Length: 226
Image (cartoon, rainbow, N blue to C red):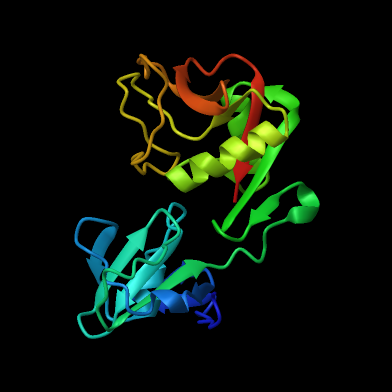
């Protein structure tokens, strides 16, 4: 259980430049988790606050080691692995307390995920992207198996067969990135996919949702996340 809070300043000034820093919540059960070199983005910073400055729109959680000044940034919510321990690490996740649930968004606390399913409208990719932009959001990112499984349950419960999600291949070369240029590190492609097109949709096949690659011109429901 997350029981301790670290409130980082909402505005941080470095070298005369201002950075917006999201409030971070400490994940105390991860206090001693050792994060290996094979995961996350590794940088060196002088403090946890400066580490948090680097937690951009694709960042969900981070860890900082005070002694080694090591900062690791992750695009997924950290979970505990008791087989790997090393004193000195402190881990944090973004605080999503500002999820606008009165605007149709849903907050999933276990995944620290704020999202909105739009079924009353069917848009192509440019229209869906613009719709999310108006909410200060972006098309949803399925960037982990935990998110994939959660979306499977959520979409089945809502009777939705297909949605557009985030991730584009602008050159139709099967090199997919999110809107901020972050590379996709998790995929769940259907057979014979991707197919050198731009957009990604989740499509119901049996009781699971496989990813398909298309033109993005066919109107369909979509999801936004903040």
